[in-house]
Structure formats: C-alpha cells, structure tokens
Image 1 (cartoon, one colour):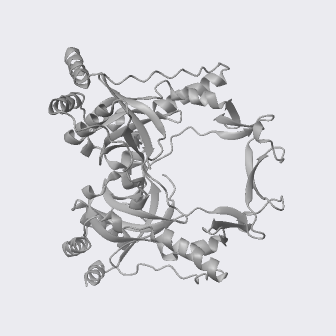
Image 2: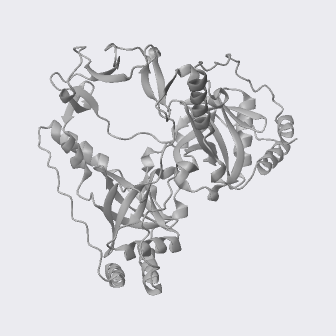
Image 3: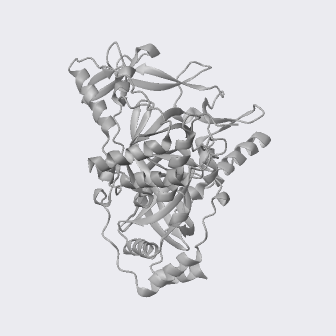
Length: 257
Length: 261
C-alpha cells in the first residue's frame, strides 16, 4: 500500500520545476498511555478554566494571545498567524546546493521523505541522481502547515530526504555554557588505555540490532500486570554509586580485563 | 547559562563520570498563550474525572494502556519508573561506531554533557574521555531513559566537550517502499547537464546566512495587530509547471546563470 502524502508542491531552481509529494519519515513507537483517575479508572478530561474567575470557560471563548509586555497580550486569529506563512506555500525555492559533508547533523531537526508526482517524474529522478552524483544537498525554504522552514534535501535510497534545519542562532554553543575548567591532562598511560578501550568496544553500526528495550520492558510490564492482576513490585531506594576511585589507570585496566 | 535537564553518570567500561545534560538547541519560536476572550485572563487547564465530574490531583492520575483485546491496564508513575530504574541514572556507552556509518535521519535532539561537581577526579576522567574519543572518527553509542522514554544516544566530541544527540530507533524510520521514485534512469546528457547546473548553483554551507524569516514576519504581524492594523492573508503563488522538455530547461537555466556572471 502506498503511504499517504502530507503535502504536494514543487522544488524550483533555475528553469527546472520538480513536482514532489511529502511523506513522514519517522513513526514514533513510544508506548502511549491515556490519563485515567486511579480511583475509578475513568478517563481524565482537560478543561479550560479562566485564571481570574476560577470558572470553567466555553472552548469558543478561548483565543490565542502573544504577551508583548508582562500582562499585556495581543490577540491573533488563526488566519492572522497563518499570514506569516507567506505566499510560497507550494514551492520550495532552492537557494544553493551545498556539499553534504559540510552540514553538521546537529542542524537537522525533523525529517521527511519526498517522492515523485505523476507529472514531472523524469525531473524527480534526474534531481535525485544528480544530488547523489554531486554529494550535495539542496538548501531551500519550505512552508508546511503555514510555517516556513529552511530545509536540506538530499538523496536517500531512491527517494529524497527533506530535513528541516535549526537556525545557527538556535544552537547553544560552548561559549553559552558555564563549562568547568578542564581537568588535569591525562597521563600517557591513561590515554593509551582509554584508546585501547575505545578500540575494543568498536564495531560496525548495525541499526537492525538496536531495539527499544525500554519500550519492550514497558509492554512486558503491562502484559504481566494484565495477566496477574498484581501491581508491579517497586525496587528499594538504593544509594547512588559514588565514583570513589581516583586511580583511573587501575579502573581502565580492569575494564579491559 | 541554561538549566540542566538531567544529571547522572556516563559510564565507559568501569569508568563512571558524573555528568549533567543541557540542551544544545534553544527554542526561539514565538509562543502564544490561551486567553479567555471576555476578560483577557490566562486560561489554565484543570484535570477532571470524566465519571465523577470532579477535579483530580496529579498524584491520583494513572497511565492506562489498552491491550489488543480491549482490556485496559493502569500503571502508576512509580510502576512506570520501576521498569528500568538503572537506565534513568546512567548513560552506558555500549559501543563505538564510525561517525559516517550513522545516517543523520536517525538524529533527534542535540545536548551537551558537562562534568558535575568539583572533584578533580571527575574532571580528569571527563577530559580523558574527550581526548580518547576526539582522537578517533568514532561516536559512542549508549542508551538512557529521560522522562519515561528510552533514548538511543550518540556521544561525540564537539568544541572540546562531549555532545550527546538522542536518536530515534531504526525501526521507527518508515520504509520508503511504495513511494514513487520517478521515471527511468535519466539520459547521460541530461544527468551531466543537471550536475553542471547543481555545481553552478553550488556554495559552501554557511549556517549563519540563513535567517528565520518566518518568525520575523510573525513578529511583524503581532506588531501590526497591536497598532490596530488589519492583517491581510496573502494568496499563495502558483506552482511552476514542470518543463515539457527537461534538457531544454537545464540548458536555459545554465545560460541564464552565465548571463548573470
């Protein structure tokens, strides 16, 4: 079955137009719960209350406001917020093609896939193959749900991956942190032991082997509770382990043993 | 200085380094508050039992999961926390893999890991990790639990500090099967023209060059509204149609670039 597309539009650069469809690339498998009242198991409802009157309010009387000064709000209608989305809601204008290896993945925020549309299927394949051959990503602006993002588009298998990007001023750099002064320089022996330990733990990246064991443990606990009808045993509070050893070499040697 | 989101220890073999986690991305979005229109007061959300129609305190709320057969199981916060307690306190490095072998589609949110406490031993162990990891092109893979969700994490050295990025599990990446991948292989001539065009439009990646124009426009909308102006919703531009002759469009694009130079 073909996946459902989330958006249709066109990638444009020079006189070239590439019609595309957008698909989600990530499907969260986190175990989701509903909130219930422990006493009777009934669903919890979230109800809006006016903080001044202390009374429940009608949902139609709830509006969105931006706090311009402390306590002063400017109320905006949904359409007015949408107006900031601009006019390029169906077009991804490519600003440049940059070498993929120059983009630190720290800039990637959310990921999607792009596939071809019936019209212009040649153009899609050509863009895919040319991006793969040049090792470049197209940087452009993309508007989704009335909000504009800067995106990087690259070849991924036989489709294209679209990553929304964080802006440089959104990243917290070393200078923004109150990092403690660096510790003492490791002794050559410690360093060589640590490097050996890295080496001994090195392996190929095999994504298929990495399962969400916590998700499995949560589901296991749920099934166990359903079967037995008993509460899950809670562990005793234990003391947090302190790292007492100052002899790094001895600890590293023991790790390698 | 941002606030730390978690603290615990990073374990590497038998070496334990006490660390704190800080977000490496700040939220620069414009946020709106819900307001009660008649009096402009803030809305607060209260939790009610749908059966008793009475307000419920946080500690009286459980987490219900519906099994396939329709049966519901309720877990308390304490029971959820008991599922994998050790992982809520330790990031255990299980292996080191080549940086280039991880597709960036797996990366989620970036953080920094800083050593905690004043102990000279902690700082020395942290520095040792930075130096040992910085000398290879490998990233450390580990796992830990943050707010009842387990994350696969990649730890690497950036700017002389340890950087941690949460990852989605590989089975959460959708298959690309079923997505239309376009037509036949392009003709050599078309591909070489497309490569030329991409290179002609090439540039170095300069992250500082890209500004958040959307947030700027949204702030202007708010300012205009505050002054009592009306906000016009613009009509979207039409999509450009794909060229009937792709090779011709590539050539025309190249000619246009040459003319501009």
